[in-house]
Length: 103
Image 1 (spheres, one colour):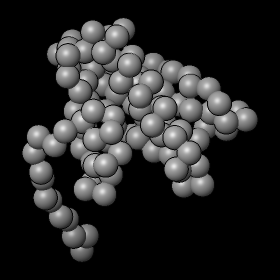
Image 2: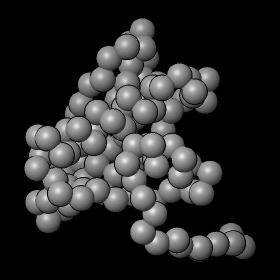
Image 3: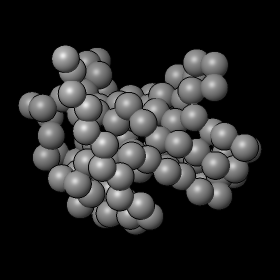
């Protein structure tokens, strides 16, 4: 298993590979030089529960705070994923409830 990074414009992607297959991904956009927004966080369903998502997001967070000199990071998530992000150091700062209906 290995973590690789790719920069595309202002986006930075980190991917976790197993046997040359991408199994987990996380990305970031650094705004205002010291603030990052995390997104596109996903682990393949058959690879969940093995710590791969944790390793991918942890690698991204380490990069942001140790190499990119970011002071704060933010993400939007669902309530059922909050336990995952809490163990990585994230705290709820606001709860949003938006529901859309496709007609």
